[in-house]
Length: 276
Image (cartoon, rainbow, N blue to C red; front, side, top):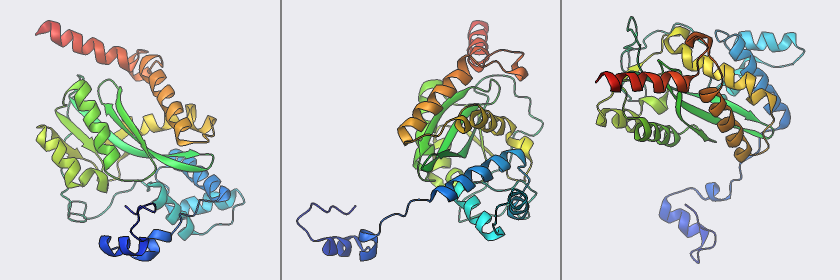
């Protein structure tokens, strides 16, 4: 917003934009290497013990000889966008003015591609920093339909991923997410409504409600992310893209009888088109 090469003084630009002058001169402080290493370890523990909150994670870290307090763990968890899985009260109330939608997948037989899509966001550590990854997953075939990386937890990169998936594969009947502010925003839910997609949201702390995306996160982190220290966002993008291609096209899935997500997704679509 502030153009330092413009002949108009920076002070005047701030006045016109109604911004505090300090915002024009503030420089982001890079996250220290010890903090990044700690965040990565918290992420690993969260995958192993998703029910662990800040207190339990603090105790687990102390067992490893790390001097850390609960508040620091909670702060880093918020920065990473993760939280413990547990049953929470008053989940039906609106949060920040955003509408919460009911969970539609309970007792629903999901047997065909594009019947249900799911989306979630996870934290991806790098050598010097971190980014966030969103993936759009077809529930029946486990195929990753679209994904995006971002260095901020905004709604924009979520919308881009959904638009790409819809453009390439059409619309699902149901779209399931958690109750994160990116997914409950009017921009996100409005996009789904405009396409005639039913909105489903889980949030009662039951890992089964979004189990396939959680398994995807575990696979991508243990089989790709934790094995590499990405130096740049570009390197992270290449690594994640390489792995997701492998995940879709080559990696056999036990739940799919050893078949690949691509094979299951395409075969089912072909069968339905032939039957029609």
